[in-house]
Length: 61
Length: 247
Length: 114
Image 1 (cartoon, rainbow over the protein chains, first blue to last red):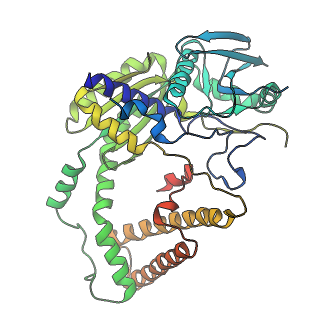
Image 2: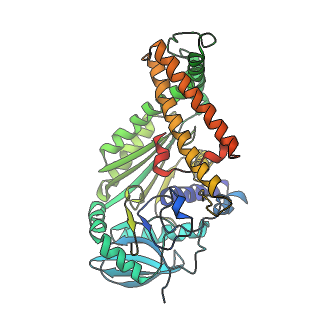
Image 3: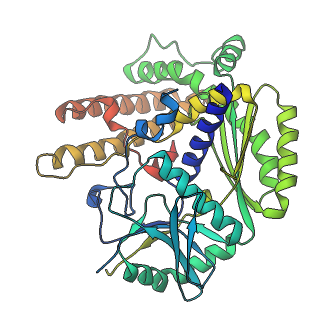
């Protein structure tokens, strides 16, 4: 159902929008990204997959 | 041996517990100390990523915590190296965490997004007084600095006007909603069509009143397209930075 | 499945999906600092910040042009400065082999100054 997929997509995107880059930042000793020149990602950030991996359901019907 | 923990958030429960959350498809643990709990699950390695199943799982945990506790959300993707790091965090930042939990006690976040018809807005701009302001000089003539700046102005004026329009429309939406909230923040034109994006922190008991105000706005501003979401944990308002581990 | 309700007219869902996808951050820029890339990584960072500053100054200047708050002399002076800044930035981009799109490092809270 067209509308159901869209509903699902919007839900996922809203979760993404609320959850990503928000909340308390914990910086630790073990840092994956190269923290010395990393302005933005101060936390113990994981290697984040690219956006097309986020939305596989959106791209395939 | 240190274990890796994926950290969801901090709660106001000093009771350690283990819980299997079927909606999240995983087991969560509350590692408690000194009146606070750090809610974690085991992280296999550093691989977890932006896979939608991880997002849903993360969200499901947060929803559970919101329902049963006061929760201070932690940045998505945070992994702590072990139980010692957890204890360190509580020892260093326990006070700050408690302050934030106090701020969020009994509160939820609601989100509002509004789309406008960008072509329509641009059309209206063009049809109204073009370029609104008397330019001191024709851009074509004059010295280099003049020409540069006035050309830039001609180039950017429509965008500037549009932004101003968006600011005005945003105020119509944001102000009444913020009035029903304890805290609020908003951003404008995250994309040309996504005119408005707002987050509101309010007492749980006021959610119905907030929703009613939202419906009222929606009705009175029919040329825009609205989206309401929530209740969420206070993601957008949890903005502290902590250093874990020894210096 | 997700308790945080989403309330939206069904006919608008698709457009919201489209715009929210656009608004979503893409892969966070990890600045490589291995020996071969240190220079370029740093250049990207520095130039992104300079570009941000240039945009801020341009925005301020244009607002004042719009209000008619600048004298002829000031327009000339500010115009020349911004022009030279833009030129210099172009030069530096070329020196480091950077494209416009590469100066889009997410500056987090700094980026919101725009």
